[in-house]
Image (cartoon, rainbow, N blue to C red; front, top):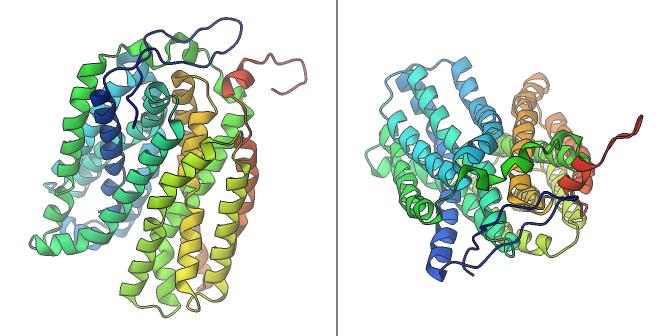
Length: 428
């Protein structure tokens, strides 16, 4: 991994947007430390959620959580990702994105550890929200620091980030229950142990923050403040693409085991099949961003991944027990639209400030779009008693996902679209 570059000159703000370029590189040791810090931070961005799911029944029983509050808990991640994601660029402009990510790692560590001591539902929800706030700002700003400090290696670094995120997601889902059992069976220990990974990430980011010594305006400066991102069609397409792929991903994480169990697959096997859909994202999340970043646009990948999802959902609806491994693999490949959209966020803006705004806008709007999805799927299943209609709806959603993705994947920059003057009666 080449050393991280340090930009010492703010982006030019003359007649047209300029591509941000790094100045001289720092030491190779700092570059390696930065890369490892990014990977470990990414590993911490999903265990907050995926470690809770397998233990949710125990948590509900112990805290006296009613079904309504339990349902609220499942919606909290997307809501926090949206709300705190919108706030991330403003925070980065004040103190720098590295400092915000470091604070995010501290929030994850404190929230995950403290909620394991919560004595009631309200405190548990608040501390979970604290951890998710750290996740949200890091979600938005890690692509920003990649764009800023690894401008020539956006594809490989997004690949490293995505692969680590997928690995953390899979590991927490797979080992939380057996780990809890090995540690005595108490859900508080099983959830609290994940704070150790957050502490490790924090220990890595503190020296990175000290070495970089960023000023707040280094996150993008006044030029980013003036960027009217809502005038960019690419930004809106990216937000819709992000939201639709997140809808599918959250539905799969929440409902796939139930789909297989209703088809006669054992409970243990259904859990393994869910793990497969997540594990397959680990190698693909590393390879895909590298391939996507080498192309002028990424439309081919948008079509291929959506086609995998349509085939996978069709198989689950029509013959779920006939080839469950094939359907799980296809659905897992479809969910790799997540690393693809992260890569496109890094490529569709010229500067780190532009990436900060696009990342916050696409993820904030996108996560808001995704909130109703798992709830609606559950309602459709409850109303019909079968999975034909819910799975058909998921397959249908992949059509607009593909269309928005094709627009977002075109080789354009949001700065060019946002800066274009609007003539009377002509949309930008």
